[in-house]
Image (cartoon, rainbow, N blue to C red; front, side, top):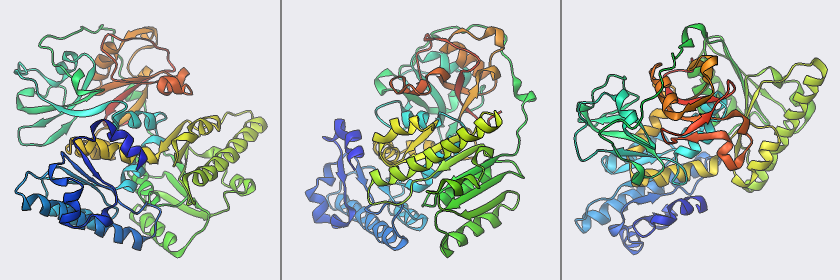
Length: 486
């Protein structure tokens, strides 16, 4: 809740936040908190993702009741119903909530969003930082924008050079449909508005003439020389996000890939859910083991250095400090196994470590433990709720970006866009143009040498101005919106 209030602090005069749905489930109570004059209403869920099913079900029911009371309070006074954003765990209750007022209610499921982000993050180092930059008011945001004058019959590929420090990601057409990363030749005459990524809406401005002409550097397209291979991923820990992670991995990886799960305690419920998911994806090898992850000798039996990625999900605990302490212990044990393997074989370990954190104060310790990416679960949901409360349509954009289908965010080697002799002093406009040659949208740059530099956002630069110059090397990467990783 504290994270959410910090996100909304600058807008509390126009937004009422309902914190405990169970205490404001009737019209009189809602009138007291000012819901009738609210610009938006956010209903938080009392239950956490790690809570028992019965507790989550009860809390979901309270959220639905609060939505009903909110709608009734506005209808009683014949007022315009403000956007309602609600946090609901179960799909059954989400469908029920949205049916109350389809045009006004937007629902969000913490486990679903975080599970999807975690899988994408484990397959592309740095994506967690990218997403954290996208979902909150502290970094860049997603807006719907329409200029006062005509688009001048521009194509989407031309549009990107008519904005100085914001990135067009897609369009909302005249029928209300969202099109993320439309074809380069998409004619904007069919667009009602565009979807723009920018630090603030005050920075969004459409210029009638292109602001910069990128260099023609003879861009390369290495897609034909890259072939996808089977992958091997390991998930440590069982919580509400684990089933989602398993399903999402199965959608991404090639047939014959391996996805394994380790749990400290295997209950009949866990084994039942795991077996159900395994049966749904017979082309993927899935195995589950029970081991004591606090014992390094048992972790060694997993041969963790053989995996492409290892995702450590938050365990249960009395508080966030205790939960993160368990995660850090596992990280340190795995790092020790990696060091011993390298000393014995002389082979460096390339396994990507991803950790789910409950407390943002632990990020420095996690970096020192060798983690290349981390998911701040206590910030992601509050940031998304805050932004969606201002523009409900943004939730549809997030659902698209966090899905295995369609286009997603990728961090790709720079050699896919520039030949080695062309890499060096390049403007961001050059990077945008190079990505267009592959029908991708470049939203930023990753400077690999800064991956542990917290002050410089771990080397992640999102939506810089078109004129920004980067001294790029072959170790650096471009952050793009693309259909696949090749």
